[in-house]
Length: 89
Image 1 (tube, rainbow, N blue to C red):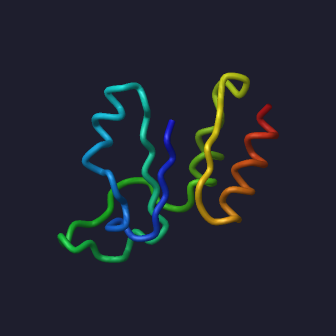
Image 2 (cartoon, one colour):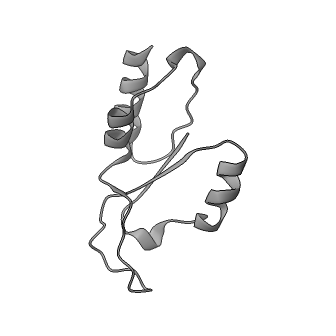
C-alpha cells in the first residue's frame, strides 16, 4: 500500500500512474490535508482528507511481520508512522 499525502490536491504528482500501479498490485491511498484549496480545474477533492499518519492509523497494518516501509516527508509524519509501525510489530 502506498499512502501518498499532499497539502492541496493540485500538489499530487503521478495521479495518471495510480491505476497502473494498482494493476501491478500496489494499493494507492491519496490523502489531502488542505482539501478546501481550490484546484486549478475547479474540481473539489472527494478523496481522503487529513494526514497520512491518521489514514494509516485508521486502516491499521494488516500483517505487520510481512510489511516494510519507506518514509519520505516531514519529520512529524515520519516519526508518527514509524512509531505506529513499531507498535504494530
